Length: 158
Image (tube, rainbow, N blue to C red):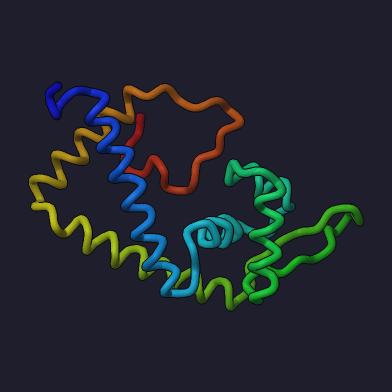
């Protein structure tokens, strides 16, 4: 079987994606924030949100969000407050410390990604961009309930 068979290419792409995510996450942890926690804080920069809305925005189970928010609150990065009109609802906001750490971890994320993609020539990056856009366009849009993270399709309009 050729190393350029579609299944082999897909396996390589999935493997690179896992390794890239792991490596970036490890470097972000050194800045004090995991990728999952960064996603929560980044989503809260849009403004205060209910737990259910945050869960939907990140496309994760409410139970997962509860654990993340509990830890973020314990670390002083997120604050819970009562909803203005519904006593049953709690609203989440990012704290100033959460905003500071989000900036720090975001810089580390950008730095490590620049280092990794810096190993490619400008021509290779342009070719990779072209190929990834072609693949993205070939993949059907997810169902309406599927939420994508901010910037997921940046520079890749369909």
